[in-house]
Figure 1 (cartoon, rainbow, N blue to C red):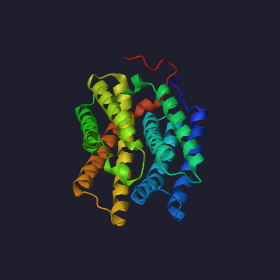
Figure 2 (figure 1 turned 90 degrees about the horizontal axis):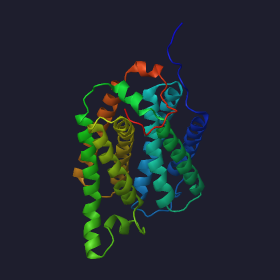
Figure 3 (figure 1 turned 45 degrees about the vertical axis):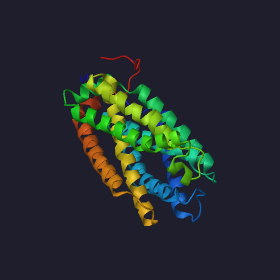
Length: 289
């Protein structure tokens, strides 16, 4: 008689939350892309919103669909990919809910913010980080550590180069003033959440702590998706006649390609036999091996 542990499906509430997220995301992006004049934001922001919508519709929703399917079949690879794409959608609809000018889909953005926050936090709590570390084994981690530290530094330098001079001069950062916003939610999210998360994840991974593997896996998927969104924004901005510095396009393009490569390598390093074990844990997720 086989002693192999049975595969465990995702808890039903998270499956339902992700299915609702898929449905609402398709509605939100399809309306935003197809209804002329739907967005009421400043003209300088519109190409960025369209680029975000396009990437979300054609890349993020299929990725969430596929990862949800495999995660629900007990795949550890599918589970961490599902968390990463959910994290991307959480970031996206947090920015829509807090920064996009009010429109008829405001409550949809708020619902997506709640659904993705529920699934992401709940999914992270239930992830067995020690099982993920065992599944990855002794694979080298230096490239993942370096990539996350470089990303954290670039994000910080990109925004601080705009914020610090404005602070010293007592003015408003150009990107905030041009968009006619009171402040930038993106600045706050990137400097207050994303960059510190990369630093912490890199440190934990360097120390070979179990949660370093977990956060690295999730953040890599998120970066690969978000990097594509930034490039889509840049494309729409150029089509709109806005100036997009070539170095920024090249840097983000290189980071996106590196993120895709490292994401694929990390996911491939997860032992397929780990799918025979429960990808989630009922034990205290803070415990470390």
